[in-house]
Amino acid sequence: MKNDKIAELLRVIKESLDMLREYQDVKLTDYRRDRRTQDIVEREFERAILACADIGARIISLRRFPPASSYVEIFDILSQKDVLPSQLAEVMKDLVRFRNVLVHEYFRIDPELVYKKLQDELETLVEFGRCVEKL
Image (cartoon, rainbow, N blue to C red):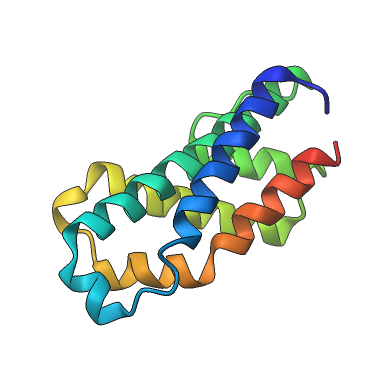
């Protein structure tokens, strides 16, 4: 799908992924002790996940799908309209919920959960980008 805003947001995701990959080799014990690293990882996850949601909202608008009432619903609509595979949409919804914790419940973020997402979910963001690029 040729769209300047989507292309810009895909660059944001790529930049965030590049930053996040820099921290994947950090050991959990070191991650738990280093507040600066935690802040960087959390912020880059926020940026990447929000960029995915913004891309999804843009696709919904451009294709004139019914509007979403929440970030989670964006991925339901994209799945229902066969823009994203349902399994990917489910994981993206989980990432949106994770982002909500990072943003709204920052006072009780579990570093081990963030670390697990760092180890396990970067490929999900890559896969989302691939799906968008194929449109």
